[in-house]
Amino acid sequence: MKNICQKGTFSLFLVLFVSVSNALGFNNLPATGDTTKTQVLDTTRTKETDKEEVFFRVYMDLNYAYDFNHPGDHTRPFGSNPNHVDQFDIGYSFVEIGYKTQKFRVNAAFNSGGVVDKMYENEPFMLKRIREMSGEFYFDDRISLEGGIMPAFYGFEGFINKENWFVSRAVMTDFAPDFDLGARLHFRTKTPWSFVLQLANGWQTLRETNKNKSVGVLVRYEGKKVLVNWGTMRTNESKIDSLDLTRYYSNFFMQFNVGKKLKIAPLWDFGIQKDSLNSQKFNFWTSACLNVRYEWNSKLATSVRGEMFYDPHQIIPEVFTGTPNGFKYFGASFGLDYMFSEHAWFRFEARYAHSKDAVYHARSGLLYQDLVFIGSLQFDIQNKMKIQPLSVHH
View (spheres, rainbow, N blue to C red):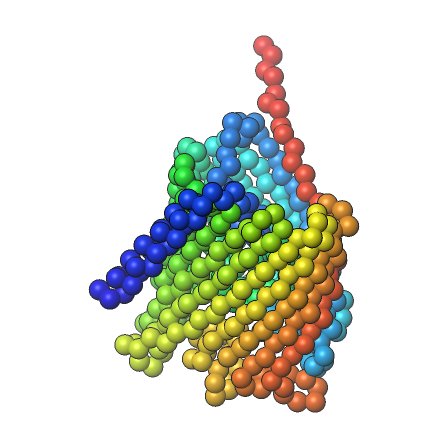
């Protein structure tokens, strides 16, 4: 009952907050993150979708990361993009093709790069190359059913680096679910609210490890100058059916537009999981982040970020340290973006990380902190083609 009351109080706070924000007269925000992610919340369906449409996209992210610790294996710890340091690397690349009508869409996207090696490392080789392979049927403008391999709706940042505010992703985004294999029921309202109910294999799982399935719920508000995204999940992370490692996860982020140039995005994750030795006990982890971005003009932008990650019980395997305090982390980043054209970008980031325990590797031993400079060139080409129906002559 206590948990139900807490959830009800939080939901009431969320509704009251966005209602007050809407009353302040803000302007509408665009969706953020992966364009593939925005399909989860496609609220822009119009009569134009009566015609058939083919969508094609190619993206590549080339980066060079200079790590002052110079780890011997050339791998950046506790991060995914860039995954490799002190070398040129393809951070992420993908090819996507899609087909859409008024009642149906299908997408297929195939990816490669350092972030794929990191985030899909436990998946079979062929499956890890599939970024998306999904279809969606629209019952009407409000309700649709989607299924397949899909980008997750958790996290402010996606794989497509140029659509994020920084070259690297926050640790909390790196190790939140990035993809799902399952089915989703979408419900869109005439108001700025939309909802998604999901049934999937598990926490970022393509090949199932137990008979249980994860249940996820997304509540999203795209109001006036404020975006609110709250995703939750219940899953069992055990690899043995007889062992209960139930996990509850909450992913919450917002974005504010202050005027035409300043953007602010607070992020907060919280999760609990049953202890493997005592099923009556729950351990927790939490993380938080604040992003601020200033767009000087249509070509130049700067961003700053502060973040923390607290996992003393070592629930998240990607940040397992084996040290007395677990993963207790603070980080800060400064980013600079310049757009050469609509198809090419240069990005730079200086990233500082500090851990309570000495977990950052260097050739000379272990250190408490890490400093990385990252430069990135990104190329993105996409095209939409309308298909006119063929005339039939008798």
